[in-house]
Figure 1 (spheres, helix red, strand yellow):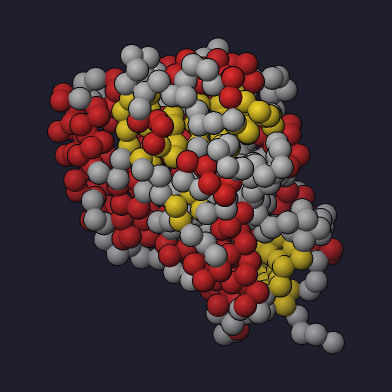
Figure 2 (tube, rainbow, N blue to C red; figure 1 turned 90 degrees about the vertical axis):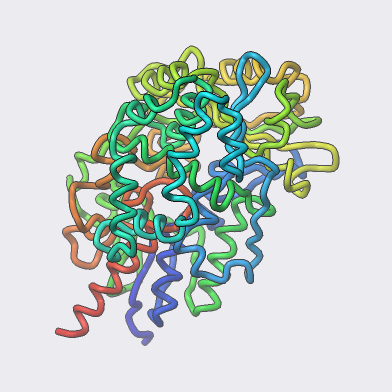
Length: 474
């Protein structure tokens, strides 16, 4: 009879796979169980529109992936993961036909804001340039999973990052800089006036300058496939098409890690109302396009950018986020769009393109946001609709059906606002543990939260490793 497993992971998203790899590297026997027929969670790639057009149903661009302390410590390139960098990480067009940019170069970025804010931006970023590896490890490993390597630098970042974005915005005199930075904050899908929203904008800006905002060759599935291949080489096993409804469905193990929502974890593990206070946030309405050519942006800079933010003013962006979080579909949406085939021709037939876009809507919203999104794109790219060959739309109900972690269409697996941005899924210094001594949470519902970076899984694996060592020493 086979011996008991050391760890079972429920969910084969990037965090679940990362947790499994970290434990397998320590010589533990690990198996992963995934409800869908393929691994990936929020990092998948599928033909959603027409044959030959490969789309990412959720995450597409990975500023925190290439710089992730967890991923950097793994030989994922041996398993096919290759990062592709667009000429510009991001562009932010305006109604006058110009655009600000987030470039690999701090100077180029600053210059796009105009002379009144260029120096301010350079001074804001200067203390942290060249320190990404230490800052990311210290920031993303909290709480209590590792002692800070640079506590002074982390504290300095905190003094700028902990206040709301509105404090950071006051440093800039013109709205070009304010709008681009507001768009960076909006990537966590929460109002701009919340705790630590300034730090969110700073982190995404630093990521661009230090490592870029790349896309994986072949699509986001490449990240998940590389993690899976590495895990199998380490002796771990992955089972797909296996839906877990209760712990008894799983083989006996010393520990269980859940790359799921806290709601699902409580239901499966019999934890009752343990996470009733956990809040889910605004959702997104996502459209994947097959295009007959590149997006015809009026400004030149978006034609060279992997990501394009669409929100002409900081006030427009703030209003859209507040409305979506408050239960109203915005009249003028803020959009995040991506252009994978600009740097990866394998994603579409020759001469064709894939295009990715979403706007924010209320959690569980059942309306159709297609026209609002396309009107906003046409505003900055006249003739866009003429290039559409096919589209695949997914509102909150469809997103939740595709991925059970996206409760009500919340792709962040929980509202990233207020104290829940920093202390998730509950106010605790041990967010990965549960009241069941053998059950742990490893999804983006736990620190450091949303994004394809694997750090929630990495940190949870450390917590499990310590728990097992402690048990062995008794």
